[in-house]
Image 1 (cartoon, rainbow, N blue to C red):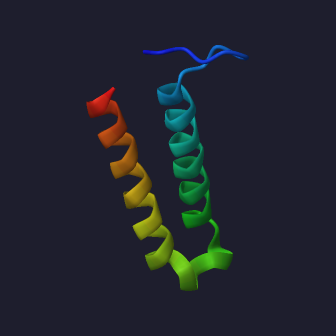
Image 2 (cartoon, rainbow, N blue to C red):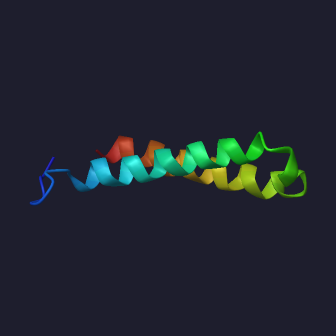
Length: 60
């Protein structure tokens, strides 16, 4: 993995962290009863983020 200056985190680590944060956020929204009308949309976004993370891990 190529390292970037500054904080020493690679692009892979930054992207992986961002996808994981989005996954946690979407999972939290699914458990929130106030968003029942948006659960289908949230599930799709969650699946998309999980796929992006899997793809990133395959390439990394």
